Length: 639
Image (cartoon, rainbow, N blue to C red):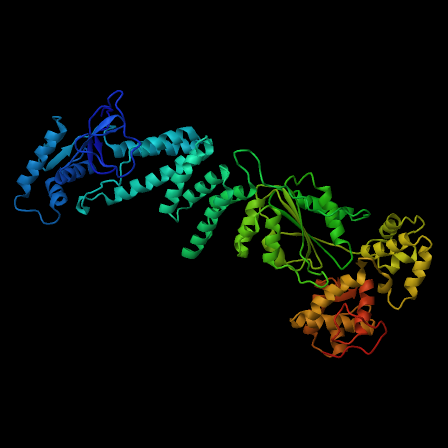
């Protein structure tokens, strides 16, 4: 077939074109869908005059022949198209008459041929608008795959310029072509998507002109996410961020109400761009690089192997590295996390987020997942009104914001794996350090670093550095009296620094002679007892039987002065079954009040032993943190 100009049109009411485009002929390509074609003054399409077919029967006959262009269309098929299932007696002569009229309208011998069983309408390459439309769609798809956005825009505009209205418009259902119409209408919607993607990618000066068009498409297709995404980006990139966020809010609410789903990844990514303020015309970004780490500890000793291990975990490339630092109260978990985080600042160019999850903060409940997510999202620049209310949606938004970044999260004082899990990023460039009394073994994929008290040499080094007393050695009594816990060592160092006349030996004598060392291991806002109170208070306030049992076991350990215990021995001493005693001991080990030194053998940390004696000296209904007696009384009652 030879390549010719448009001759036949089905992208709207069936029409004929005047043949070859006339040079300099004005075009009606800009006419919108549904524009009328005046019978007295034919318009043009691509320079080709549009010749309306005014007779309904002729339009039907032309459409039926064009639906099988170049192939034989039987007389029976044509009769059904013209008269439905009830053709008149004179149907055949009438058909011949309509064919003759169409031939006169075509005014081209050999165009509409008669064959023994029916008729064939010859259509050459480039003459039927549907085929030209399909060619432009294929070209646009190929250009889009290659990332040639200029060509995508041109092909889409050319294809959409052929559209005059609904394909086969004004024809009865008997004509057929339903599947073709559906395919063409879907292709048109895709062309609009591709064209606006191209416009956004090319970022010409006409982005503001796209907003009315995209607004109309989004309103016409309220569940088609692509148009809403493009409208969001067009609004945002022309300085209308608030309106872009409203589009996202409305779409998200509609999808949730009608379908029970969240927007797809492309919409979420566009939402992230809007929230960050990136991609704006002036090049200014509202994204603020977080730098929330508290100052690194001024005096830090030891833990070199642990620090190197955490650094290796956070430097992995398979996914977001997660390191859990666990241990008893005052063992230096937070200090270690901050030391490592500050050392890795250059690696995490996206910034550092720090959040206290308040598992053991006296006088306050742990943060809920919703509170933690909202706090992190606000820290990343999300306005409070745009923080999703559902935890799953908020968690997904947090992952989207962090995915393209290299951000370090320090989640301090976590209560449980369930509290931490929704806060974790998924991007390979991010890292997470979690501190917790518990090792959070339910947190899959995390590397765990349990901390023990410092060595004698490390303890002495910390005392010397923090107090300025250079005469403290590893054998000094202060080392053992503090239990080698960094928090207790810092309290002792603060007392020595505050009173230059107070010698280390004198302070050691005071600690050794005190009814409870914990009284002297409290200074300013530092206190070992306060840290232990938080853990014990959480057990006593819990409604779980295991937690209540654990609190009572700790009292028994203090009352009996047990250096260690196991479940069978504890069961005999307290009169409970061994399984319940073992569960209580395991719970105390999980909150780092006891240490399982061998299978089934549990030992309290040195200062925890003093704390247990204090708790044993109080009525069982006592709540930690109040005024208490330090003298021994009768042991707690049996379970």
